Length: 410
Ligand SMILES: Nc1ncnc2c1ncn2[C@@H]1O[C@H](COP(=O)(O)OP(=O)(O)O)[C@@H](O)[C@H]1O
Ligand SMILES: [Mg+2]
Image (tube, rainbow, N blue to C red; front, side, top):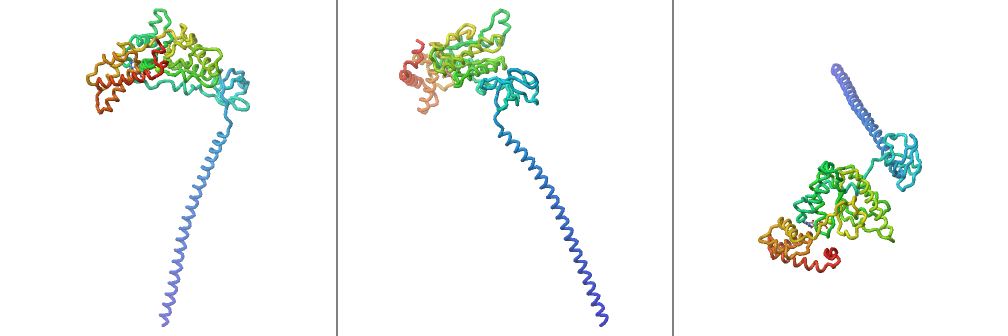
């Protein structure tokens, strides 16, 4: 009995001991878990703190941006003179001249008379040096992609093509020829003739063929609304050409700015005239540069200002006339040559199209093609061409007599 009691107590004790050990182990386990957790929380805090720092930096940056956006606009002007390292004379874009202070952080070498700069609105001090920029209209005028028109596509104008190449290409490619003989090569040519006879086409062929920079501007783009804008564009056009020399400037539809100067005109007309004056000045002024050539084109030589046609400006006037019989044949050969035809006689079309311009001959071919398509055929016949001519004749007689080329040129 005693022994049993002893073992009972012993058992009790060992059970208690076991339990205490178990508790301890559990406590140790939970302690380790808590320690891990706290370590994790510390890590988390560190990353969050890093995030906060990063976000603070971002805020600073964004605030800076906001401040920049809130800054008043800067005035654009040009430096006229540098007085000393602190002061300069600038002309702001509205033409007024000021003496202003210079931002000391600017490179002194960059500050030269003529440099484009940004000015503070209040103090007009020079804040920033800007690089020279071309008007987007002017820089966009450079033809980077060559047109696909070749001299072969310009039909029936062999003499004119020859003259243009002589006046424009030869001086650019072989200037020494002119030097040897001792003559100054022509500055440019003026293409005149009724609409649709291939003036633009010929200029495009020159652009395709030449290695020189080709800059194309339509006269109406130079006729600007604001005073001085057109003149500035002409100036920039020529300085772009000089910078990218050798180059060819093509002024299409020049009558938009080259019309005769009349008395009692509106202010818009006067602005157009100023643009013309600038053009004349540029034409006179760039004689030293043989590697800039000009091709101009117009439908209306009758309204062109005499000053443009004076020798030394457009040295050569090349006439692009309404095609004669032989030229019509050549033009039709070009356009019909690209089409699917069966047994057509070009000769009979030539007979019927007296007075047609190149564009009208092309329209005849297109119309004949349309007739064939409507008929469900894949090839053009002689009857299609004849029908097309009848339609075009009708259109031509409907158009007012003033608009028909012959009325202008008879
Ligand atoms: N001599 C020509 N040879 C071939 N196609 C011509 C000729 N003349 C005019 N054309 C056609 O008429 C279109 C218009 O001619 P274009 O050169 O723009 O006339 P413009 O003399 O009014 O500048 C050309 O795209 C071309 O398809
Ligand atoms: Mg044209």
